[in-house]
Amino acid sequence: MTEKDGPKASERVQSLDRAFLLLERLADAGRPVGISELAEMTDIPLPTIHRLLRFLSNEGYVRQDNSRRYALGLRLIRLGQSASRGLDVWAHGELGGLVEQFEETANLAILQGDLAIYVGQAPSPHTMRMFTEVGRAVSPHCTGVGKAMLAELPDDRILALLKRTRMPAITSHTITSPEAMMADIEQIRERGYAVDEGEQEPGVRCVAAAVRGLPFPAAVSISGPNSRVTEEKVPLIAPVLIEVAERLRDRFPSSAGQVGFVG
Image (cartoon, rainbow, N blue to C red; front, top):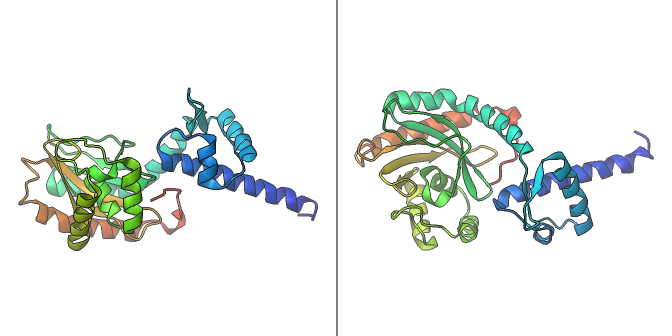
């Protein structure tokens, strides 16, 4: 590369960095965002944001809604599905083993921005079972996997996330105050696993354990009707989930590196 080419190459790299930063901040927000707010989030000059968003919109990676705010575009779905399949392959054997042992649905989730995203699942053989489609995004405060992942974060980051999401009541059992959630988080940290007592789906109990040591927050869980996943079974399920989480950490491909998930 000549000296003349150097600055141009550097400018291209900076543009790529900024474009990816915009995409990540849109993902973090989990909602359409205006240009001024994006400028505050990124410290990128407004003219540069205009230029990058115009390019990303033309390519389908970003879309603009009726209020002229921006959100992630549909073209990213294919990329996300490919990344999700990679995670599903990595965890598929362990999820299947959990289903064989407990005959309940096993899930893998990651924390992306302020949302818990289900990226892998092995279904229960029972007709009546927990079914959460891969790709579904839910608030972390009302799910076992979400709470397990939150417990791995510093308190200030947890409180900031809870403030942003406002902790909506999904069921009558959903925890809706930061104080109660932080008390639950402390219990999760002490015992090493989280329990969702019908906080996302009425009549469903979920036991979850965080997969520690990855480049992104992740958790694995067992979910089913509370008539089968009884309180007495929780202490039997939890140690197995913790062991599975440890094996998933050890099996995670080091070449995968930082895959763009934000916790």
